[in-house]
Image (spheres, rainbow, N blue to C red):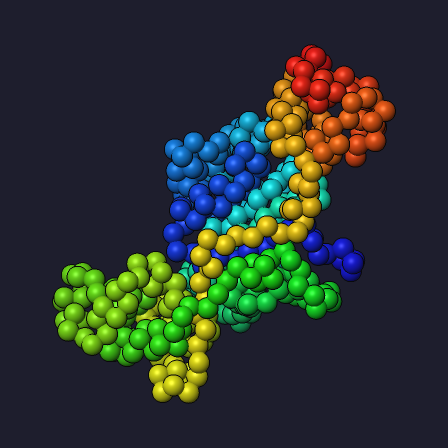
Amino acid sequence: MLIGIFDRPNLVYRVVPRTDRIAQTLQVLGRHAGEASIVYCISRKETERLAARLAAEGILARPYHAGLDTKERHKTQEAFSRETIDVVVATVAFGMGIDRSDVRLVLHTSLPKSLEAYQQETGRAGRDGLAAECVLLYSSADVFSWESLVRKSAEESDLEQAEAEKLIAGQVGHLHAMRRYAQAARCRHAALSEYFGQAYGTEPCGACDVCLDETESLPDSTVTAQKILSCVARVGERFGVRHVCEVLRGAKTEGIQRHGHERLSTFGLLATLDQRAAENLVHQLLDQDLLSRSGGDRPVVALNPRSWEVMRGERAVVLLEPRAGTTRKAKADVDDWQGVDRDLFERLRKWRRRVADARGKPAWTILDDKSLRAIAREKPSSPAALLRCKGIGEKRLADFGAAVLDLVAGREARSE
């Protein structure tokens, strides 16, 4: 049973509107330089493209997906386990056999297909009990992409129509539960716990973007929503998100000129926004059912009864944006580093890697991060003092004690 053990208070959950996948990925990884991170993508091509870009930026990253040959996948797993790379950019094929305890970041660049998948994938972070970050770059465009894939897969299967529809309904239901989690402005820990049938207290968790007050509403959200909805009406409810946003931004595209949309009163009303930011606002309206979208390969956006309530000023709208420059430290992260000599911690990590390489073992099996931080905090000067540090027993004292005490004292660690 999960009761009493599901919530992971050391995990910090953040959901960020996706506006620029690569720039945002680099920004998040920048908070975890030199630390173990897993970045999840939907497609194999995306993992390779993103891993190449990260490598070009000097980040030790490799792709991982089921399309790579077994030898290549094994090399990546080994490199990650031995800390010779920091980042694996992967599809969901990665992780089942990974038992590295010190993953400090799990980043989803696209929406997972269910909360069950999200819980499993984020659960690979912080297994050593230290604070770890779980970031989801969210766009409701992913919901429509997943729905299209689900329907296409069902249509191509040998299932009877009734069975296919049942399968579609189940998978789409999971998708929309994931969407509701991503768009909800409530404690992430509470939302996850309650989804899996566990009660959660009413106090702020202090470990998610909502409880850390990292989001804020866009000024004049209702007016901005009215501009967007008015544009949907002006283009005849016959175009998709991209075209509507191009009209609002005042873009001079061939399509806009062909349809004469540069003459519309809504042309250029959101000229200060870039395309990604404008599309994010439209997707927020779709999430809140203040705008509708058709199915098919070329979906169009259309007004619904709630749209008209907004247009007539009968319904207020809240559109969210990240609070500028604000990513706050969760209490668990602050506590974990309290009193730790970071330079000594890094020297201990480098020593651990050398020992692990020499012994052909994953680095964390020598001493985990919790033990290294305890040593860098307590700075023991004798075997007896080292023995009092978390994770150090008689065997590890015998194996590594002399080398660790040398490092603490500022001497070069004697060879193992």
